[in-house]
Length: 111
Image (tube, rainbow, N blue to C red; front, side, top):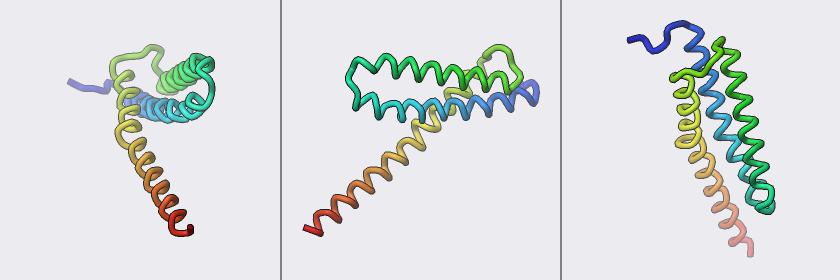
């Protein structure tokens, strides 16, 4: 059984992998104003995320040459989001905690 029937499908899978990664990153970036703004704006931010993610997905499908989503396309989105969520996101948060600890440690020594 061949997973990719044509070279265009492999290219589309890669584009959707990037789109899934960017969707995860965008969700975290929109989480910053979501925590700071009143609850009234949360549905608007969620709608913005849906529109931007849908646009990225449609663009990736168009660049890949497919007119319809298929199973491997959804798998590409899921894999990209998983790479971000399980790898890069944890790395960024770990670095942030480490830098925060360094800043707090340096601040404590100054006083």
